Structure formats: C-alpha cells, structure tokens
Length: 490
Image (tube, rainbow, N blue to C red):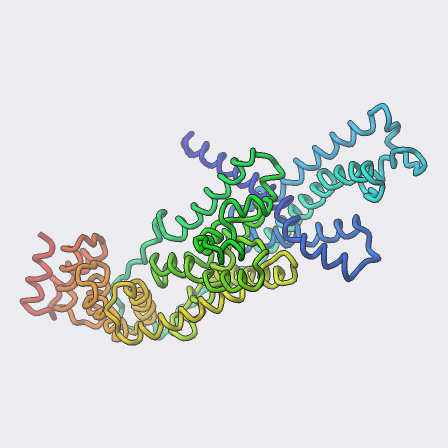
C-alpha cells in the first residue's frame, strides 16, 4: 500500500475512533437525559447514582447498536474506546488517593469530611451541598464516562462477532431468469452531489451553531447548552416577537439549536430523511418543505404560548417525513430496497417516540410539521397525477421511471419519461432513460434516436455508446435506425 494511502487509512481510523468515543460518552448521555427525568418521577426510591448507572449501561449499548447497524461511520475501532476514559479514571483515582486530605485508597469513613475513595468515585452523595456536588462531578466525568465507553465497546465487539457468525446465503438464480431474453445493460443512478440541498441545509445549521457558540465565548458549557436569551437574540421562535412584527423568526428558528446534542440528533435525521426525499422529489422540493412546514405550527404555538422560546429543525424534519409518506403511500413510489434504510427509519421512529416523553421537546412542532408536510405531499402527488408540465416534477418522474425500469415495466417507464421530455425538452437524462426503455422493448430506431439526443445534450455514458454500437450492428434494425446509431458515434 502506498504511503499516502496508509496515511489516509490511519487518518480515517483516528477519526472513527474519536467519533466512537464521542458517541460512547456524549451520545448515550444525551439519549438518556429524558429517561432519567421519567425515572425520577416514577421511580423515586431509586437513587440518582443508581439511575445514572442503569441509564448509562442501557443507552451506551443503544448508541453502539445504532452506529453499527446504521453504518454512520466505521465501528472497527469501537472495541478499543474504553481505553481512554479508563486511563483518565485511573489517573484521577491516583491523584485523589495521594492528595494530602484523602489518605489511603482503602479509606471509606463516612464521618470524615471526605467520603472515602469508594464513595467518591462509585457512590457519591450529591445532597452534601457544594462538597457533594464536587464529589458527583468526578463521578460524572470519570466513572460514568468509563462505564459508557466500556459498554459501548463490548456491544460493538459483540455485534461484530455476531455478524461474522451469520452464514452468507447462497444465491440461486431461478431457471426462468436463465431462459429469459437478456436485457441491455443498465447504468446506476447518479449520486447526489456534495452541494445537494440536504447537505447545504445541514451546512447552514452547523455554521449557525458554531457562530452562536463563538459569539458567547467558546466554552464547554456554551457548546452543550445555549440559553433562551441567546436563542431569542439569534431569531428563535418567540410568540410575542413573531406577533409584534418579526415574522422572519418563523424561518430562522429552524436553523437554531439548544446545544450540540440537539444539533447532532437533528442533523443525522435530516441526513437520512432529507437525502431520500431529495432523490425522489429533487432539491427544490426539499428546500421548500424545510422552509414551509414549520411556519404554521410555529405561528399557532406562538399565538397560544406567546412567552415560550423554542428552536430546532425537528419540525421541518417531521415535515419531510410527512411528505415522504405521502409520496410512498399515496403516490405509489417505492422506497429504496435497502435494509440500511429501514434500520435508519426504525431508529428515527424510536428516537421520535422517546422525545415525546420529554417535557423539553416541542411536540406541537413535531405533530404540526408532520401534518403540514403530509398535506403538501398529497397536493404534490395530486398535481403529479394530473400530468402537470412544471419542471419541479421532473426528479419524481425520473425516479418513478427508474423504478419501472428496475421492475421491467418499460411501458410505464416510457409513459413517465415522455412526460419528462415534453415538460423539459433540454434535459438529457430523460432522453437517455427513454432510449434505454425503447431498447429494452426492441424498438431500436426509437432507442437510437433518444440515445443520440441524450448525447447531444451532454449526457456522457459509456454504456450508451456500447448500446449504440449494438444497435448499429443489429440485423433487425432498419437502415434509418442504423444511420442514426452510426451517426452518433462520429
């Protein structure tokens, strides 16, 4: 392996290790915050330390499961993340035990001013005013960090062993497929560009969050918690301000977040939901849904609760989810046949249901955003069925055409693609896909003509060149079709 490739692989491993460490310590703590409050209300007999141990164990395992199954980043180094917090814990234990007022490591005397070594790190009493809080801070920073990282590593290791133990199923090709006529080779759909609408929205959210943290003086506290006064200054949803002449807050509030955990949660969901919606409906629709769906719920909540301060992209994300559901169930557009997609969808639903239980979450925005997105999706599908000629429907028709080609329903593909060509004559991809559909239907003259138009419009594809050679050399093609195909090769 070249040295540059080795450096790149090492850099990726270090980055993955750091991300796993953050997910193990911060991610599981963030997921368990709301559950801790519920346990405090419904299980008052359980001490704070016991709740923290139980929640850390459960949600560290959940975080490892999510990262591993959703392929967010590599988990190859996850089984080693326990080393860092454990080393820090041991150093802190040594410093504590060797201090002038802490005495022996084995000391555990309650009447003393300190609580002893064991109680300091594994069973602190926060009720002892400031001293108790100091004890609890060591427990939170060092002990709980080590517990979370250890459970995260064990879960990642167990999942890796379990996946390797599952035998790969042998694929047997049906006899009917072997005897059927071979279809022309088909090229995969192009991936979303880096400057896709979803990526741009995520970049704006991250840039605004960084600007908010820097403006207050970068600190660990401001990184994880942003106060209501700062959110108000930056344009959060505040009913009294919206109703008194600041309607722009209905849009800016979707780009503000209460802390790093809130931002990370929303941006991961936006990445999953937004990119799939963009593949099916295009960047303009995704941007429009993101900006429009929070307007109604935010305005109505502001009128009902004029003094409340809220922010976040979750209302817009639920709007995208409602729009996506309308496309799938009312528009009969198939979702990607990917197990990863359904794992992500299941985790999104789990986190959404978990957030409903939190008193801090604006469920009004979630439900309202979902309802508005669903309504917009129904309107979109109705217009799509009405054979509208607007170019905003082009990505959806192309997506439906590709689904039809995958299912070998070439007549349906031709119908969708002809509407694309009529609405946007200068778009190259519809001509290329239409040429393929004609080719699969053995309409070689029409296929050569559409392939030729796609190339003239700048659609460069080696597979199309091969198909044109095949058509030019075909014995069933008419002389005009051969001339068209041959002319495209000059």
